[in-house]
Length: 334
Image (cartoon, rainbow, N blue to C red):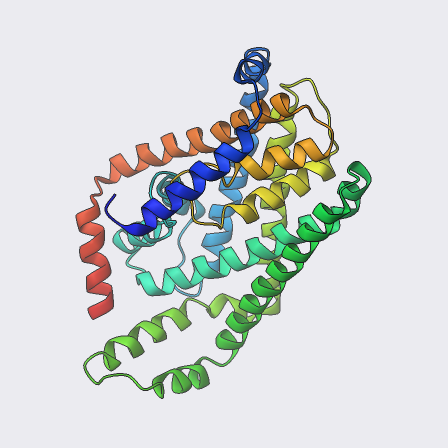
């Protein structure tokens, strides 16, 4: 609460929520939420957990060069991590799941964090591909050419950044000894050089799954499946409300809102998820009150189940943040 990053994120969230709700009659939003057929959330949540299982399988696949960890073991850890992302700032859930994996399977945190960085890079590529491939449909739905052009520019720039990250990781994975030699020549104080070189070495170990083109293809394919399943949840939740958009439009919405959640915000992506989601639906002609009701319900349906499941698994592990901080310090010094 005392960190400036928290207050920056809270301010951004408050500003975006104020922008999203400006001019709305909240009683209309409430009426739309009351009239929703919430039974559609059941298959929606089920499909979302299929996507979480696919994420667990992908992480298991990336971890194979480090250690064979079954998907059934990885799944609760992934749930803990996503719970952490939902309730702690700065995506602290990534550190959390890396810590739990270290505690249960003795995989170095720096190595597992490298696999998480690979995950996020592939997620970014697929997410932005969803945006770029479906901008034509948005252009047909709205006369605001400036909006479409702005989204296209941001998506192309973001795709370039994520693709560059994937390429850099692949090069580091393909030439680990040369990469380690280059990193070892970076001028650093003698007091921290051994620790920094050790961390870099373990990080490079975590990129080993990118040395095989087959593995790269499997990670990319799994990432596409994950995001299609998540879009399936968007579609199923939409059935609870009296409007209809194509699956492609929801792919576009999924890509845009997840791109926006990379912006600093309050825990749970408040505002960064909701404001762009409402804006995309409004661009397709969905009444703003209805678009707001759908987006808020969708956000809750994405946030609450995985947070509860992750909290259950975390309680079962009896984890405290003081232990995580000590583990991070040990990893850095070891």
